[in-house]
Length: 453
Image (cartoon, rainbow, N blue to C red):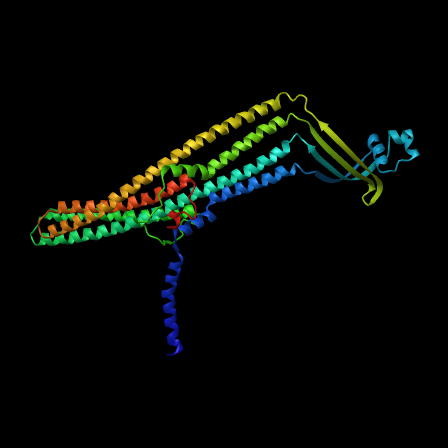
């Protein structure tokens, strides 16, 4: 075979293979969707930056324990008598002639290049700075717990959006099958009318039924598009991103546990409750810091300065070292008011912690009973599907044989369609309610059974 004939065939083969490859690249599992959301969701990024800010606050609090060193370079020029007199002394350029009254009263302007290094160290502040550092560390841990809880809530939203997309796809499939059944009923009705077996109203009823199924299919198509856009939003990608779910809405086994075990697990693992426990410790340190503010403070200061008449030199230098103790005797009641406020805030956090425990127990119970109800409803819906399908099959045979009316047949089709819809809806509720139960216990993450499936 010549090269000229091989190349067109290769190009044709490439055009057939490339769409298949690109389609395979757009298939998305639930775990991949969760991973993408944890990387790209803007709300999650905001929580992550809050965590970084809390870590920076810890470093800021620690800086108060270290000495502060400063540097300054300045230039001044003036004929102010006091400035001139002092500058000549600092520059080591004062002479006996400078004591002349004229030179003291109306001195010649003088310039001063001042180079200054200064240091300040708070040696003791009754433990306030150490308490602030401990508070900052705990606030960092609180931010981390907030991020963990935000991740769990994001995983829940992605699970719901992904499962909603699978449900929408199944509803679309059910609508397509229902339309095919309606077409079959319509064709049979038309044939029966032409054969004189039934009246014209049967054909009209079949046409109305087909129009209703068409409307349901249109809605189903739009529901799929909306569900895909919702999932894109939760993942933090562009709304028009195209992909196909790599999974199907199917029955899966979920691990079970008693209500008492689930409540105990939630109280041990919920990040938001752990954050409130840390907040209690932060407020306790706040009360201690407010009390410590009544104590003395001890500061050390040092200063070294070089004064020159020219930038390159030609002057003198001096230094200063000092130790200072401070004690506020009266501040208008500010410290006492601050102590009262910190105590009130501690009482507030304690109350919120108790309320959170009760709220978490209620969340777990609600999620547990929702999951239990969804499980039982699913069993009922699964049994009803087979019954409805068998009833429709019998009804079609009876109608074809002229033993029943089209009204009976359409009623059976409607029941079968409702049974199919209820089955997939109950399966969706079963999976999302289990995810809600894991969210309530603080166990929902990338490796949860409902995510890995």
